[in-house]
Image (cartoon, rainbow, N blue to C red; front, side, top):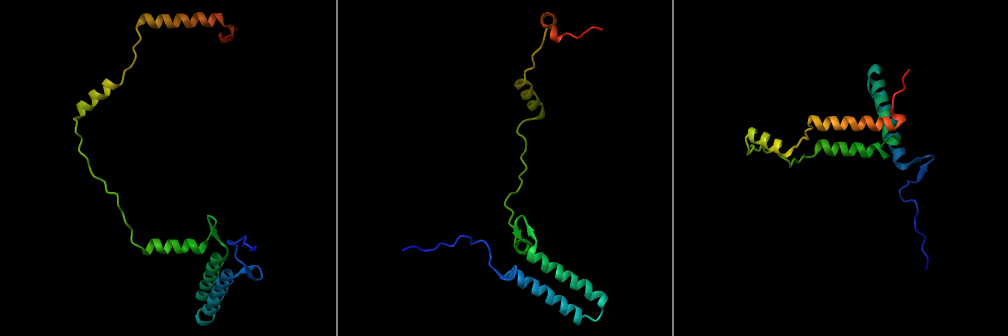
Length: 144
């Protein structure tokens, strides 16, 4: 016996033309809120900006995506963050140094070794570089 397995379960069905049920309800609520504000607020200079904000918010809920997720999910996460309790576990504990600063400097000096060149070794090194340069004509500078 064979059964048909649903393939695209993340994609919502388009019920109202090109809109899903959620998108339709968000848009309908925003437009309804705009109409109510426009009718019942006596001053049009106040009602028009409020209605535009309601429509813009409903458009954002319907179509705007933040990092590939609907704006409604981001808004929900923001409310949970602002309204929920925050638990901080890490607390800084000041530690007192066990060694004195002079001892730390002495330990650092003993761990770092800087090679020292004597005058004779330095002369040998420059002489060998000069000889190798004269043997390889590509490394010499051209005289004009």
